[in-house]
Image 1 (cartoon, rainbow, N blue to C red):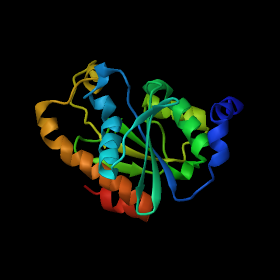
Image 2: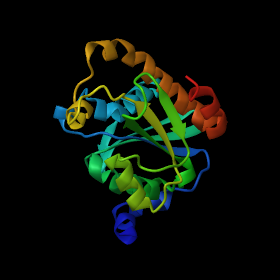
Image 3: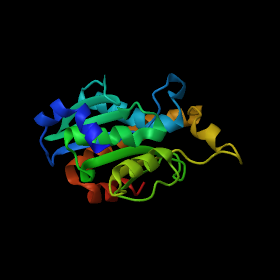
Image 4: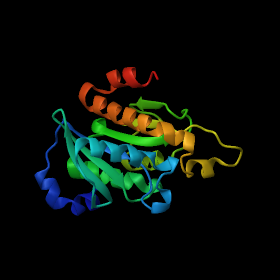
Length: 207
């Protein structure tokens, strides 16, 4: 499988060099319009806002939509996988190979029902927590030692209603607060690439 990925990007990889100042920032979600504005797609919403703040535009590319921007000397490769949530790892691995980015410089934004809505948490490693997108990334990379920004969506659903809740649209109360939390998330990402994970966690995991 590694050879297959390398063949896809053979020409581009010849031009890429490893750079400790280059990061892959991945927002998880599903590309189909039916998923727009759902809690499960909040990873897309975060990287969309980050791209806007960096003044860059997403373009459709191999296995996802990609935008590349700069922040304080760092190169941020923003990725929205087009492989659907359950196969996110295929896209993530391919772009890590293409851009020669190590797991230490990978940050994945993911929805988390185990965290209250309006909270975010930065983690440098950990289990998939039952999230199928993270589960596939773990399988493709063979490691859980990469950073993730967990965006709390809460667990305000009744018994047997988890799927409907996660795949449901934000309600009015959530929408009123969403822009603030999205901005807090992009601020956390910018901090992560400039001051590192430890200080970012100290600053953003308290709220």
